[in-house]
Image (cartoon, rainbow, N blue to C red; front, top):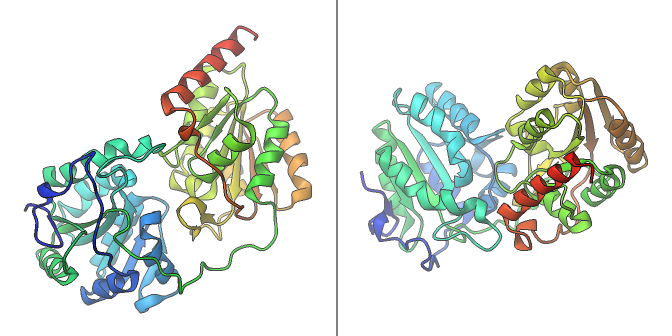
Length: 396
């Protein structure tokens, strides 16, 4: 089936990469969720995107009586939705296309062969073209429609025209036990300012304080920071050649640091991770614990939310990250939730034999500043990090 936009125009007629993607019609967040309930949806799960912040705000507030389940990654979200469907309650998934790769396995090996109806609302990052400083979205922006075409999955792209027609076609696709994707360009779903973000923690260090304390203790170690505001904060507080800023590839910074630490055991590597990112691929902690790299320090800043996409809540309120790390085989696992304790635990971690884990419970911060990639291209970030390792090898 050829994917179509909501006004009935063939998807192939949508703007190609590099063309204008301006949209003339915006559907309200409430209208979108009401349309989902009319399709029989009872549960919505997923990983947040700023393009979808309005619907998520409403879901966190209990709008339309829908159950909302924040998932650790997009593949897990699709599996949760499939389980709800199998138990008799239709479900939908929220995702951004940068996580489309995480969806592929359960999509092709669970949903499609078992003919489990699945509705996926997926944002179109990097489409029709990646914005300045966002090259991590370039490739997925190019292939999202093509992948769905190749998988013979019906899909619609929000744009001009009435939404009732696309919901009717989605209903037909789901009734035929098919997966169906509703694709969301930037700005096509309204916000929900009437629903404030849910209250979070009220005590603990904020992002800027955590980064400042870490930079004061990191010394000549190599620092790898996760995607989002943590990398922005590190770049704006203390850019240097020995920093590697992850943009995209959420949840993988621990594995990148592990690979570097195993390759260069004579140098110390420090990971600055976030709670949402750590949850996304939590199994990486078990791999670290198995190989026991003595030169690795893993810091997780747990602010309870996905700050860079709108501070949506994670599903980690019961997760004790330091206990998980200890159970996975880290030699030392420390924890603090106070500004006063920051420097002490970080200093202890930097002096200890690794792998060392530091869990810091804290608060979201103020504006994080610009992305590193707006000043230094991603390939240059990688090149200068490699040069830093080579210089360290030579004792410079």
